[in-house]
Length: 430
Image 1 (tube, one colour):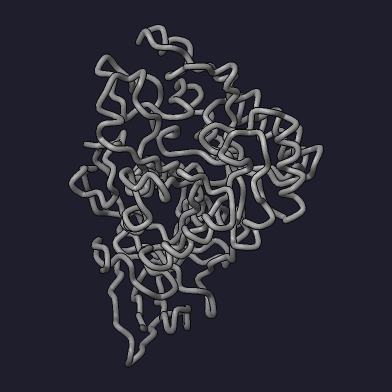
Image 2 (spheres, helix red, strand yellow):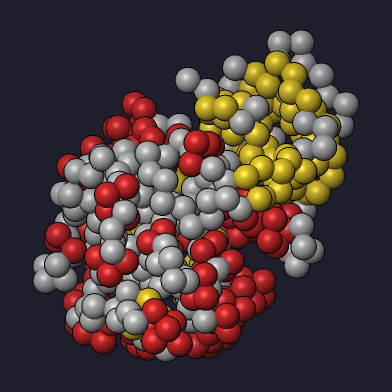
């Protein structure tokens, strides 16, 4: 396959590129980047008015496979990823069975090779069954391709166990991704503790339940030297803790989700929309602004979705018993473009850094650059197209998005993975 992307605005801060030019893709790699290119055997794609970036990557995604394919599976989840403009995802291990051994890592990889529409990097669990009691087969999972470790969904509760996890991960040069949640303090909380929980008459989830474990895990990072990645950060004090850790020179990174960047606790009104029930919960406007500031000043390293698909029946029930989480793969890019890039608070180069460059660096996979010889993982964006988030437009099996009905401007039109198109003109390539 050969493709010639013509007249695109090409943005890649890694090579200080932001100009209108052409990209020739041959045999899965970028053959040339320049102006006025031609190739007799290449399909020409007019990208006038569009933006081409290194392929976007989401390092916090729930594909639910194995064991919960009624919510999502590798085929539907990677289709949703490609539809949203992503060339790769990192999948979380809280499946059934848990991804806590080499056999399950291999299963996910083989299924992704067979049915996937994007690359799938596998994150193994820290402890067996996410129980926090016994280490997972970390070395064996690394040998079979695991890129990182997390007990996402709960977090490792014991400080001693988390220290052992970090010591072992350090032997293999892998990052530990931490879901910071002190379950003893959080208890049965479902919404942010304070005005929101009082107004709704629901059990509160204090910000301190997140911040205590952020502080603990930064201390363990200092003790062990192991790279630490704070997942879905939501509070102002949490952002400050990460900022201080970076100032100290510790190997700490962090991520934020679109729903914590663009929604706050006030979005949950007396309709008790369960699509807005997420873990960790939507916080105050002060927290939201602090998280946004952290993204803009580089304290927070990447934007992820925490794509958490559920069946209708798991959300179509009382708020207190509804499942936590919302989908995000198909809305993330549009939200970032609409809320941050088009408003002028973020430029395309910073968006690429947050959604393509830094995610690869955190999980230590090969970089993708728009220059000769690089693998052709590319995202093509129409920055002017206006669209409305609709369940009828989703490729995901799940419909539990908190942004249904929102009008957004900008979305991916084409995606290339290793030079192979998986999205063309907004439609998944079969």
